[in-house]
Amino acid sequence: MVMSIVHRITGSALYFGTLLVAWWLIAAATGQAYYDWVNWILGSIVGKLVLLGYTWALLHHMLGGLRHLMWDLGRGFEKEFSTKLAIANIIGSLCLTVLVWVIGFLVRI
Image 1 (spheres, one colour):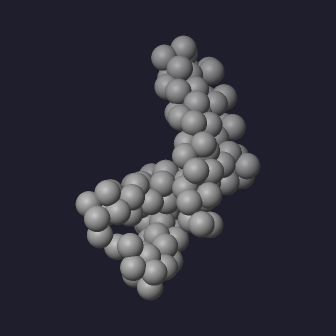
Image 2 (cartoon, rainbow, N blue to C red):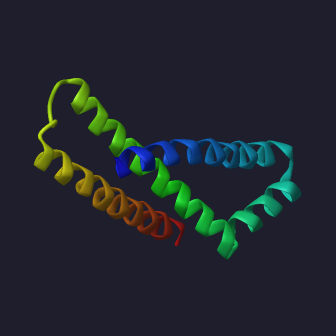
């Protein structure tokens, strides 16, 4: 039940994150000064925390979608397996988020 609620919350958070991506793209098309300003905001501590949350929400929602796909195929309804899958969803999304950010920082150097 908790994972269903979290899946819905992350889905809603993705709407906000998509607005951030659109804002960044519009800034890139608008001009260098506005683009630099948006990058400054997104590069701040608060901006990075928001982007970190967006990354986690995206990956968590994606893994939850794969879990739902498995259920649509008629698999994974056993209580024990479903609980393990929910835990794997949380751990997997956290690990993938760290991996994406580590790769992002390494590519930036």
